[in-house]
Length: 237
Image: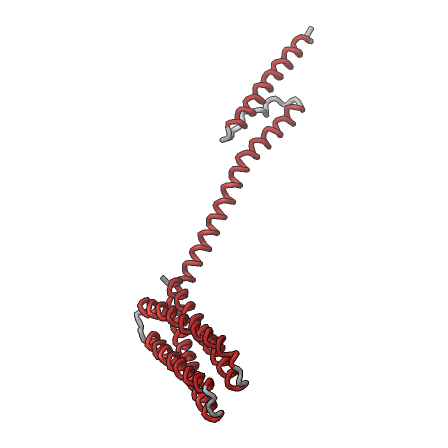
């Protein structure tokens, strides 16, 4: 739930910032048209404005979904005001371009252009306020959920450490279960090489292969002991 809300708010922030960028690009093309008296900017301006208005419609769906998720519609109402002003900006800019096409006086054109510039700046101020509100949501969510996430991370880290410790303990125990009996066999082999048959005894091991090896070693020791005794008796007078 936390990550879903944060993702939603981050998407809203990105969308709000994108609207600001698209509006600035659109207005720049409009200013170029009037300042340079160049009608070649009109077509890219109209394409940018159509893209802006289309994006705002998509943003409307996201903003309403976020308002439902947060159960707070103030940010959505702020967006609706921005949306209305952007549409007003589009209508006023169409009037300006019509006057430009009709060859209106430069004073009238610049007067309307400056009014549109003020409207653009007002929209930017509203979007900045909306971004601040969205960032406040993010701070509140982080403050509410950070302790929970921290506890979960600690639990995950502790569980990982316990798992690693258990794995190391189990591995060492298994290695000891194999290496200790083998070490006993090596010592008995050295004693047997010195003729000490009494030190040879069955090996206590959980591994059946090592037990079988120990039994075979004991059997071999018994046979060597019997052979040694028989050889000793045969040398008696």
